[in-house]
Amino acid sequence: MEKIGLFLKKTKIIIPDDFTDKVLNKLPEDSSILQSQKKSFIFTLQWKWASAVAVIAFLLINYMVFISRGTLENNINFTLKMPEAQTVYLVGDFNDWDINAYKLVRQNGSWKIKLNLPQGRYQYVFVIDGNKWIPDPEAKEYIDNGYGGKNSILDITRL
Image (tube, rainbow, N blue to C red; front, side, top):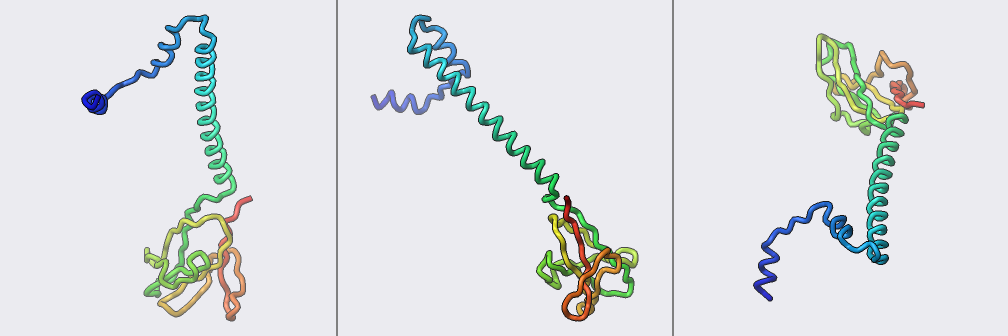
């Protein structure tokens, strides 16, 4: 018995996909119990496929809803024309006003950075040379920052 057990553990048995159908088809037609089991097996298999299709459809629909609501990230370009600056950082509520989080790159007298931001409404400013906080001159909207200055508003909400 031990030798048979070891042999079976080492032997790879490949069962063809149509094995169950072949066995059930060889049984006599008058065997009502086996026929009901065959029908039950086919019914179960169909429901497994239907469930898989339903899950895939659910995931696709949710993905489309996320896209239509704009919850996916948006590529936003920030640019500041200030050739005399030595360093420029971008700070805002999207990075918890971290003065070192986003350093802009100088390109032909302008400072640039591209961020991927989720849908939302954000306040931000540029920090010039580590001490001068200025709103974006190109912003479409501003808000009082509570310290006598203004913050730029970036609105990337979608209806």
